[in-house]
Length: 181
Image 1 (cartoon, helix red, strand yellow):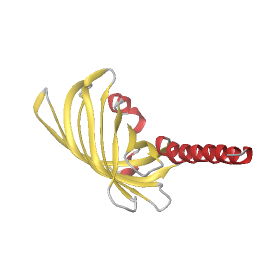
Image 2 (cartoon, rainbow, N blue to C red):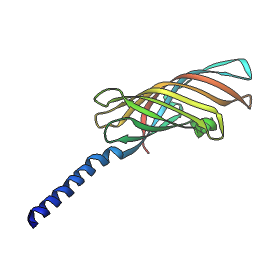
Image 3 (cartoon, helix red, strand yellow):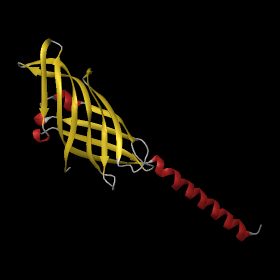
Image 4 (cartoon, helix red, strand yellow):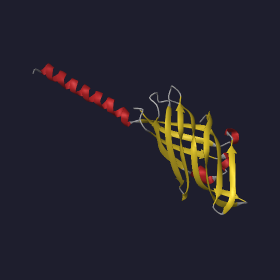
């Protein structure tokens, strides 16, 4: 093998390593995207200290609650790591506001326009307080999150007659308009 052939082989090998790097590296990287939506909730709650206490609630989307979803979207369209936070109107429930839910979103169809998600989180100050969510996410053709719906269960303190009371609840939720950052 003469010198020009060695140089050519050397360049081809470096090019192949470069292609391998470019082909593998994007799968390991993920784009982080954060979206905030108006949130509507419908459910019921009951409290530990008062077995007769049972209440239904309906917070319409215009109530002021929000859902923020942060996604780490892999370039290969696979499973997505997600974080979510609920912010109550005017900080009505500090425990709910403090909980960050962690979970995964799994592609539901080949087009990538629907995903199933599961999230759960506890209050950093009291791990007895939790929120767990299971739902669906919808995306537009550009991959932007457009809607999140599903079911939730929780255990959080609620103020009853100016006193915190441990309450449990469940219900359904849905997002409204996307809010600008």
